[in-house]
Length: 357
Image (cartoon, rainbow, N blue to C red; front, side, top):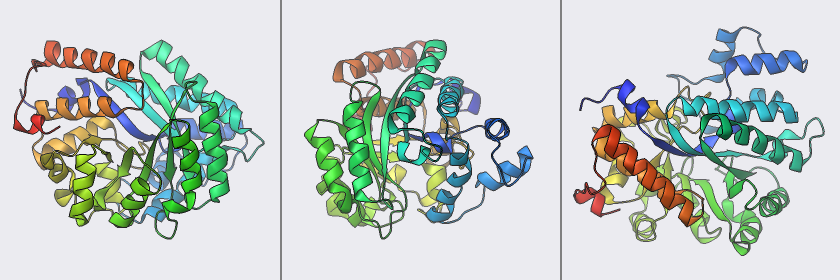
């Protein structure tokens, strides 16, 4: 079967690494700014897109993160959070994403007096309304921020505990990596582990494998966001593989932030061939100007991924979701059946790479 964008768009998909505040529609930013009397650098949609999207340009992780000042400026009311959460589900439904974990930091939405509870409840409402209309299941990952006080991370960890089994499925540490070690936030992650909540940490994106080591051994991360530098420490890579720690790979974003020198040499395929559990994700749909379908097509063009490979990483993603085991099993069965019925990939299809996972 010939691989095309049209075909890849139809495949059932799972996304584990998507930032809400990096995945808005340009038209929504303009509309929210107008309704809430918020000044933007420009009112022209094309100019705003050029400002916010990296496109084929490259920069630093810090430069990439600076763009969030604009999107966050229009996300300071409960109504705006409900809307963007709903629209995100509407957008991902168009490319047959069956489950998505949406991450953001409620602490960044308090400029106009919104409480942390309101910031969670609003996103929950938008995601729930989206699920009712489009059938896409979702979960919230609360983000601590590396460059903000560890005490704030602890408050956010308490928030995640409060909303455990009520919409929140995990906890994350995001933001600028260099000079802001994860171990400084370990008290927050102790609170998370002590309450049996899953965690993922951005690590090995803008700093070396020592950052991944801290995320795993100081903070107990179940998954690693990005992890492009893991290949530089073979012993740690073996540990990650042996313990089935999942890497949330974001190809386009990794190239744009210079986490990799060239997409051609991105370690994604190397990790996959080693049997490491890898998933494909967008990171930020707006800033990276991408979709999960686009990321799949990149994997095909760069690494010759075929339908059975996409089935494999989709099942891996669903296995790695921060959902209860029985819910994951049901969704894996449903996704596997869709691959069989619509694309001719049988559940019993196994090759040597599949056996490794």
